[in-house]
Amino acid sequence: MEDFKLYDLDSAELTKLIDISRIKLKEKSSQYKELTEKVVEIIENYPNVLALIEDNEVNSLNEEECKML
Image (cartoon, rainbow, N blue to C red; front, top):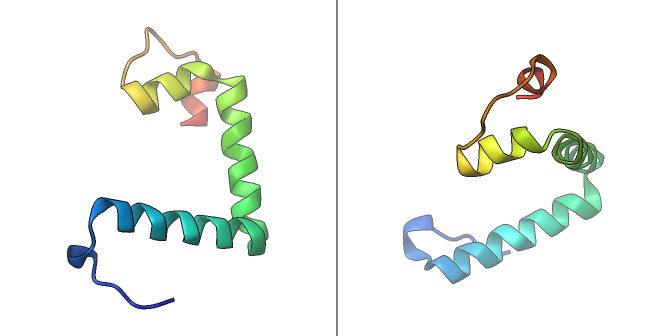
């Protein structure tokens, strides 16, 4: 892959490079795969945590949800 300077990229190019890197990591890195699975598990089991992270909105978190942060 060609080297790029971030300040020379438009958003579409940057998004493409991020996607390419993510796909390579997903295919070749067991650590990336494990972390992705953990994130999915947290999202599925603790929707309030996801709401807090994505929207900065949540009514309250219980003790277990606080630990997941």
